[in-house]
Image (cartoon, rainbow over the protein chains, first blue to last red):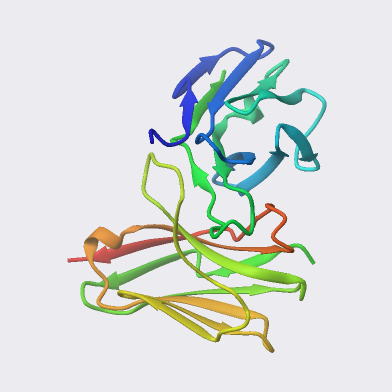
Length: 116
Length: 112
């Protein structure tokens, strides 16, 4: 398996622009997570899905952030409009159904976002 | 109550020494405690995990010690190697509901 795939790996944009981050989870995994990592705040959970349905979006910082999972093999995280304080590394992770023998979350390589 | 507090923030250890990273939690409903390892430019990866029905779990040079009454757990890396240099995160979750609460991370540097 190729693991969790994220694109782009790097994104540089200007303040006010729309940014879309993409994630392909591991095939067969029921859960998908979006995290943000910064030096100041560490690793923060933004939102997670179970079987394509958003379960907990309490970590989404504000209305400028939105996430979708139209099918089991694709998810997007959108920031509109972007601001310099959104600069961070964004990770997508997936995990199998809990209780299926493993509770491991498998992380993608991340997208490094820089908003100028 | 949802926080997991991790210390130290950074750690320097000589090759062959023991690295110890500590975490504390408040929520007694937590029932799963993993440690993740992250190398620069990579995503975190599961290293080892424990459930509260045991007080210790060992996998190779890595050991988790768990103290349920104190609500603390720690990662011990025996015979630390330069290749262990990475950032380590503890985490906790409850009810197998998918959501992990991560500690702030510890940057470990093992000197040759």
